[in-house]
Amino acid sequence: MKQINVGIIGTGWCGGIRAETCARNPLVKSLHLAETRPERLAEIAKATGAQTATADYQDILGNKTIDAVMISATPEVLHYPMARDALLSGKHVFLEKPIAIELHEADELIAISHKNKLKFTIGYSQRFNPKFAYVKKCATDGTLGKPVSALVSRHIGRSLGKKITGRTKLSPAAMEATHDLDFILWCLEPAKPVRVYSQVNYGAMRESTGADVPDTQYITVTMDSGVSFVICAGWSLPPAYPNFSMTWIEFIGTEGALIIDDTHRDTQLTTMQKGIVHPMSTMPGEFVEHTYAGPMASETVHFLEAVACDRPVLVTPEQARQVMEVYLAADLSAERNEPVQLPLPESRASAQTAGSAR
Image (cartoon, one colour):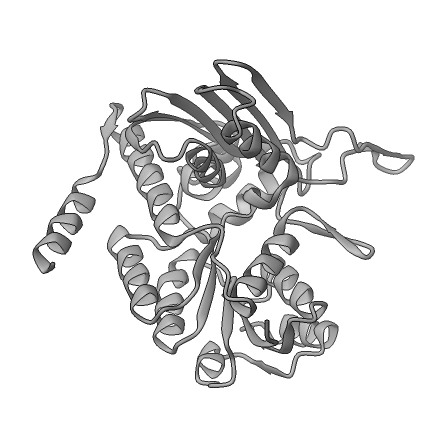
C-alpha cells in the first residue's frame, strides 16, 4: 500500500463528493483540482486543501506526479476525450458514466487501458449501495435459487431531469436506467443479453421544457439463459422531490423472491414551512454532517484502494461497454418500435476486426 496523488477533473455535484472524500482519505498524499467555473474551483479548493487548482484539465494530465484522476466533467460528450487523454498520459482513471457516446470510443479506451496496464473503471455507484449489494449476495449465493426474472423502477424529480436533459440529448435509458441495467446484468453473470425491447412515454417533460424529451423509458432485456428483466426509468416526479430518487427492486428466483424499497420514504421530515418532505435520497450522495447519504463516497474509496493497493476494480470497462450496448439497443428499439438483437452490428464489426488482427 502506498499514498497516491489524485486529480479531480470537474468539481460539480459528483466531483465535489469525489474531491471531499479524497481529501479525508489517508491514502491520498496530495489532491489536485480542475474546474472551469472560478467560484466553484475556489470553493472546493478551500474545502479540500487542494495542492493545485486549475481551469485547464491538461495541467493535471501534464503533472507527472499525479497517479490517478477521477473525471466528473459534464456534458457527457467530454468523457471520451478526457479519459483518452488521461489514459495516454499514464494515469489510472475513474470515469463517471457513461463510458462514452459511441461504442468505438469505448473500445478505444478499453484498449488503451489494457495496453498501458492502467486501472480504468466507470461510476456505476449503485453497486456500492448496501441494499443493492444485498440483492447481489442473494442472487449469487443460492438464497433465491436460479434467477427467473427481475424488475427495477427508478424515477427522479423533474427539476433534476430538466438539469440533465438541458446538457445532454441522452435518453432516460442512458442516464438513469443505465445504473440498473449495470446492476441486474452484474447479478445475472455469466449470462449475456441477446435481445432488447423498449418504449418511451411523453408528458410532463415535453410540456415543461418544450423539447422532445420523454418522461419515462421501459426496457425489457432477454438473456441467453432465458431469463428476462424489466427496467423502468424516468425523470418527471413532481417538484416536491428536489433531489429525490424513487427506486424499487423485485428479484425473483426458483427458491425465493426479494423486494427492496430504496425510495427513502422511511425518512420523512415535517415542518411548518414546507410540510412533509423526504430529505434523503438514493442519488449519489448528500453530505450529512460527518458522512454522505448515498454510495458515491464508498465508491470513491474503492477506487483509491484499487490504485494504492493494486486491487481489481469492481466495475470493469468491459461491463460498462456491455451496459452501453444495451441502452443503445433500447433507444434503437424505441425508435423502431421493435425488438433489437444483440450484439449490435458495430460490435460484430469490432469483433471481426479484432479477430483479424490476432
